[in-house]
View 1 (cartoon, rainbow over the protein chains, first blue to last red):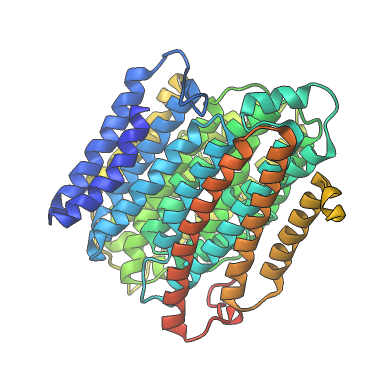
View 2 (view 1 turned 45 degrees about the horizontal axis):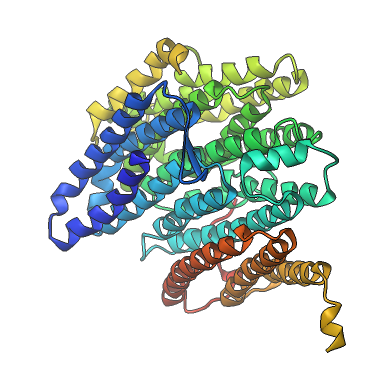
Length: 447
Length: 105
């Protein structure tokens, strides 16, 4: 509860700091709040589950782990991107919006009631609609914000209609009551329609096929720091919320749900990896690769049992690697451009940036001993006995993934006469991220 | 007045579904950004109607309380959406969504 209050007050205090002309205190305040939240989760680690607000939210082991993961990602995002946010000139608004969406992200991990789920999704998304459109003079950013807004709010409405139908069928908004109602007796057709609509709504939010088409447009048009936020914290929070909803309310109750999820995952992997390999814009390619990673995260939901280790590991490894990649992407995008050609010869003048980007991309591709490998390994080893066909698709599409990640790496290490020169910053933070990616293999057992 | 006594839960749900479907199809087929925006609001209001009628059917008030939350959120969405739309109009001088095709591939 204290954790949620800290995150909610953070946004308000950031706006207050702007009023009192204390802009330079915003960044330290955010870092302190994030550290306080991480400290809070570790202090509560191993505690019994604590139901609060008349059964609306619960602080259990899953909520603590996922809160810690999201906060670490948010902190790492802030440390790698704060210069870019401050450069825009309206940093207080952007920071406050980010803090509000962060509050929604934390709420996504610990709801036990569908009302809270809806509020969490909206608190998470509404600030991000504004952030996507935050570069007011750029037509691309405008278009990206508008598309994200229309599709995001339509997805919320579809999800909401699903919640209403489920409420009609079961008579409750509480996850565990819904589960009990679905387990006892026959399942009404109404709950099937409700489930399908909830799945559609969430499919939009986490961008899996066939509802992924907005993601490349929005990711490409939004300012790169915001794309980094959407690809990591927002996607991670949505997937954490979906995991809790499906494991809490539908696990074992809906007989064909698993088959539907398998089909969605397979289609997503094929489409996303296929589309990513034909992109010439690196940011757009990263968006498609994010869609394929969403399929892996979705796959953790069909691993039997409520064991969050695989999803937590996948989100943090993908999150840190893609924050590193988006950080370098931003450096190159500001000086040269976002096309693959703009990356040619990056290693000649900026060996550190090229190396960091290489390690981030290799981790996303799943090369051992980097963290991304363990994320994929846990998903595949969890599924190999129950869904062997799906794991084959996962491995094959990962090979395709290797192709488009290596394309960028080859471009960066190519020798050219006019290499791109970028302004390098945050070397220390990025090095810490790289160390984290390597050290994850030791830390796996505690997650 | 006899007809009002025969209105059942199914009628409310039918109306709500029709409104929701209108919203979805309007969103897919209309080209004006403001109309699309109205269609999203229509979908949210269809949900409100469904929730209130289910709430009455089950005899508990949770659904009706939820409707207030949805109204608040819809208001927040309108505020954000109109701001984005205004910005779009200032930069492009049109609200036709067919012109929004700079991002593709």
